[in-house]
Image (cartoon, rainbow, N blue to C red):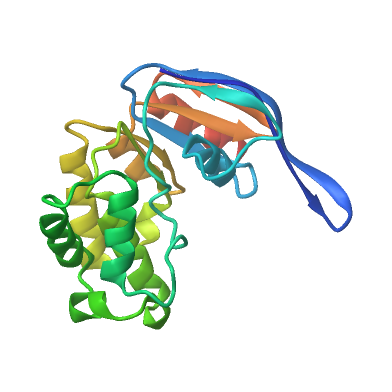
Length: 219
């Protein structure tokens, strides 16, 4: 179970404080694939970053005994002067992967990302798409309780999207997803329930179809 209590998040823009949301509270039942919907600027990515521990609320807390991936649509986090291989090796070691698992994991990351020999080139030479593909492939090397997906359908070309969805489908046998996307058909395929962020408030729906219907009524 994931329980959010009184989450408030704000930023200072042009000298004024802008609130993404205030006192946001909700509960996600155990072992639920959750879709997160909302118009642009509603706070979907911010909420995912907080759930993944990459950002922090001004106030409030997340309560859960689950472990979360980083947002899979994220391209940041790599050291530019290091190769893709060495970046992935470093991150795998940080997350506790032992030396016996590492070589096989790196081979799988290189293969899934589809970057070929560029895996051994500095990340600063990569296109944004290559960075996204390596970041996605890296995440598939781990068994998280929840995979956080932020517009993952935007990553890579048509063939890579197909490969990525197949990899996620395999991971879903033992893990769950928290997914934010404007691709409603993808949410229907991957999610059981949903929440809709709208004007700083949240509505939870047990059925993803109900969440999508509500989102369509306000979008």
